[in-house]
Image (cartoon, rainbow, N blue to C red; front, side):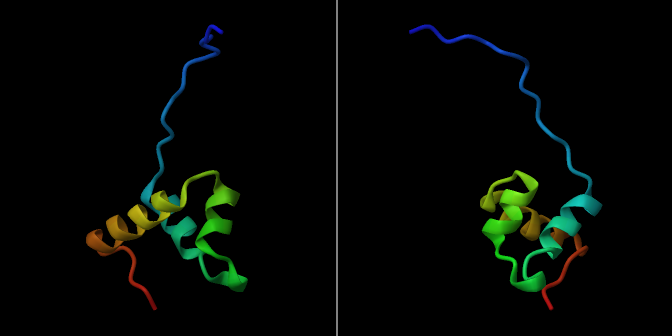
Length: 63
């Protein structure tokens, strides 16, 4: 079997505002990290990493 290149894979860029909105969506109406990740087509680990990054930048604090 031979693999084919179907297109150029590109990394998505996320602004801090978008990251904050996604991270903040966890817990709203009981939404889990997994549900939010699936909704936004990112991994659960990405949400945890963003949470850590935003906290370090002082943009997010758990309430």
